[in-house]
Length: 400
Image 1 (tube, rainbow, N blue to C red):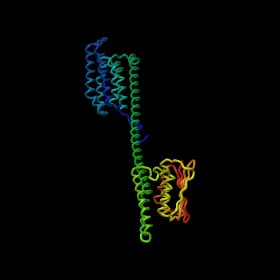
Image 2 (cartoon, one colour):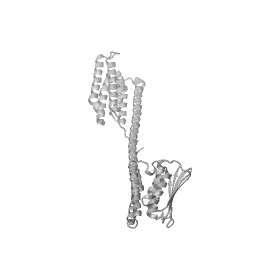
Image 3 (cartoon, rainbow, N blue to C red):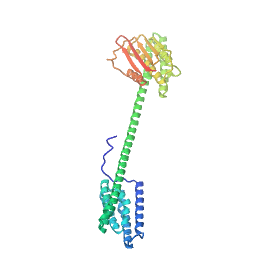
Image 4 (cartoon, rainbow, N blue to C red):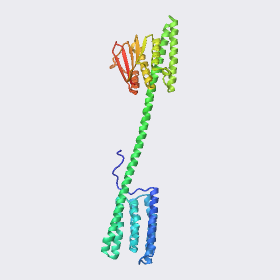
């Protein structure tokens, strides 16, 4: 739970909303009406004048609630609450002195104390209200035995019951407030997680598209540039060779245009459309050989089997990047691509006999980190074995 959720809040009045306020007003009206009827009914030896005077005090109490009590409920204030309770007590005590049956009004006055005062102050108000019938009876009659043995236990029971109920309700309210704060915090956290996930997804998609563009469009344009330069160099001494280079450049440009459209449409790379990974690698090796004149051998071991599209895309892009590096940086005279289907994993190895490099000292550039990231996304592992003048072997292992 967040530190923002307070577990030790100061005492406060019982909170009111519109529905609970309306309920308590109805409850208080029922209590006042019932006690008023009880007071006005001819019973016992209470004179009519005293009963009418008591009824007038009860009506004054109702008016006092409307004028002072209701505004106190709407806008809680300690001073206003004390004034309201003082007025209630000033009307309740004379009513008790006139008709002892008025004590039944405690069923409405005790909850009202907790509604208009802070909890700790309301406890004191309830004690005063609860002891009022006993004190008034003793002052009027002087019957100490009846007051102590009969009325005092009833007053104590009323006070204890009211305090226990108020404490229980206050605890329930505290827990509800804590849960509401926790729910609000969880909702905020969930929104933040969704925002971060959305941002991570956007970043991941940007990285994926950057890798796709690097492995297709950038490499294809490099091939086109190289072939155009070769055609320009061979234009006068060997026009046939120049035309061949231009034809290869046009084919490479068309293939990369198809790749670009596939990326835009979020489709499978075009070399894999309607073909297996082994066939796509064979075409890749043949195209590399046609463009560079460097012989490339493509071999498949283990029989071959269908793979998830994501795995095929990752392995094809890894082979493309490895051959591009062999042409661009290694000045290789030969290369080989081997695809091995083991029971537990798929292994792709691309070897060249070029210049090689020191993997620990060389700048990583963009291609190799992108290749490694792609392979790790499908749970695979990339290893690079190379040394100066000893060629390079790139090995990608992906779980089957």
